[in-house]
Amino acid sequence: MLEIFASLGLALELIGGADPTLLGIVVLSIELSLVAAVAGAAIGLPLGALIAVGRFPGRRSLIVLLNALLGLPSVVVGLVVYLLLSRAGPLGSLGILFTPAAIVVAQTLLVAPIVAALARQTAEDAWKDYEEQLTSLGVSRLRAVPTILWDARFSLLTVVLAGFGRAASEVGAVMIVGGNIDGVTRVMTTAIALETSKGDLPLALALGLVLIAVVLAVNAGAYAIREWSARHHG
Amino acid sequence: MAERAPATLHARDLTVVLGNVRALDGLDLTLEPGLRTVVLGANGAGKSVLLRTLHGLIRPSWGKVTWSRPTRQAMVFQRPVMLRRSALANITYALAVNGVPEPERTRRAAAALTRVGLAAIASRPARVLSGGEQQRLALARAWALEPDFLFLDEPTASLDPGATAEIERVIASIASEGTRIVMTTHNLGQARRLADEIVFIHAGRATERTAADRFFDQPASKEAGLFLQGELPWK
Image (cartoon, rainbow over the protein chains, first blue to last red):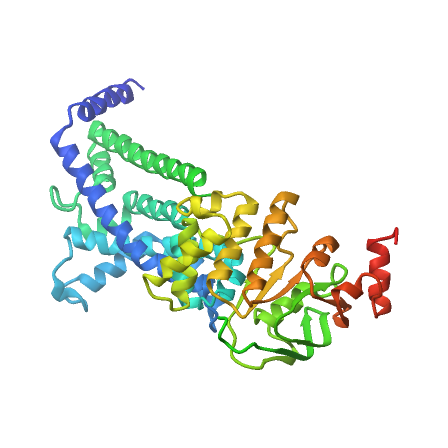
């Protein structure tokens, strides 16, 4: 018990003193997760809205598949990205395995289905309200996609932040394709795993606290934005 | 709009099956230019389905709707659907979709807002306007499209008397500029004030089409007579 408190004390010192190692890892994590969230949103938002509004054969199966991808095991994604990017793999010539770029690729593959599945639900609810009016105005289904994405922008921001949360808290895939290389691909989650196994509990604990704080702050921000939008935009 | 030749609408043997209900059952109807038509009938008679089918939102199971020439149409619903943007942007969006270029788009949208008395709140988010203001905005949006036919499905059903009077004034001005009005209502006073002719719907069929000044005293069909007795039992 005492050891935990001692570690917690040291962890708070690391955070309070803005320890450079800690800071480097935190900044890299947030940067990569942001890029992955933006890339995942760029793929997932239009895809989700298209499935919500579209009428095409296989739509139901696609929705089931998409919802199943919500539970995509990240280690498997890591393995697949590893195989694709390894020197013998089809994308090996890019030479990005064990670089931050590889982490972003794996995170994006994990974020995009989440964003697409949640955006599909949000867009479908909006389409129920809008379908008659938009059809009456002469809006085609394809033209309705950007309209609905823009109209649901505040709800969808929460969706994108959920994607960011997934990217930031991801361990397995990031470990496999990034390699947890000190100063290059070591992010909060992989550092926590490593430091815990090495027995450096203060650094692990400090990183854990920061990770929780980041996720909390992101969710608080999303909540505040929704409250504000409900008051000002209805 | 004024220089365009007036259009006539013909509906022949219009049948709409929803689930296992015949919402419209072989309905025949002709709507000639220049009149304001109010569609009356009991709940579930098929008024809303008729308007949506004429407007093209519902595809008839049998029969068809034909127009004497290509027409522009618009529809105003009981509950206005506003996009999450400003009042003005709700109208410019509709104009943009229909290929109206700038700067005419903004000019027409602003003019439509002025005509419904909403010029002062053009930049306010549409979703936070009152119910009456939103419905006037919906009318402005429809008006800006300069339709030949304007369908209105119980446009004042969820509004208070003051807002209702405003909406009726706007509908009358739209009609006076040559747009053909086809609306449903449960408000018989409103039907008297706005209608040139009444189409009465019963069980998915039009039982009569009568001049408004005659309908309320001498309905031609038995069904309409019973309906009026139910609605106006003191007569």
